Image 1: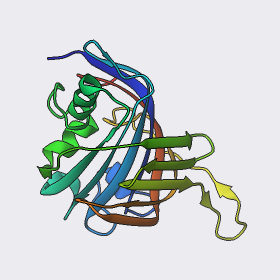
Image 2 (image 1 turned 90 degrees about the horizontal axis):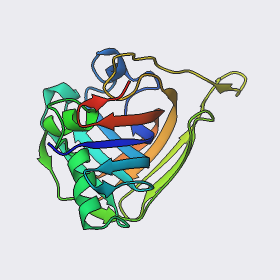
Image 3 (image 1 turned 90 degrees about the vertical axis):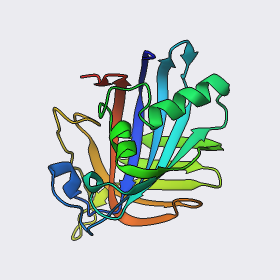
Length: 209
């Protein structure tokens, strides 16, 4: 197995309510799961290939809960990546060269019956975890925007997070609201729904605690 490691940040948006039940081992708000995620790699390597500064994204949908399978996944890869880097990013996004079910990417892929060929696009990711704000775009393929939840009476920003000490995606996140769209093989429109910001630190064995 190829040794790899990455450290970066994520902005993810799904179709669940602000308190996404999936984070609590409960069924999704609307009975199905749709999500768009953007992943910024601040530092990373895959074998001899350096991944510093590259981005990747996914659009994914399931007809029911994630664990029920039958999903469809669209990987989106940074067009700046060279051949080795493209192979590396796709391997990470689709759970290859990874212990079984060790990363959330591996789990998502295992729960999808269709994984489309990757799309290569210019990906920009501008996010601030503490401020709960994000502007992300995969040119011509997907976009995402995140903001804080607002108090319905005062309009003040409401801060909330989720702690998952043994989580396979993060140990603690910041929760907000998001608006995202994707086109092509997995067309989605998400509006004013659950969004989160979290740190990414993984290798082929899973999340690095």
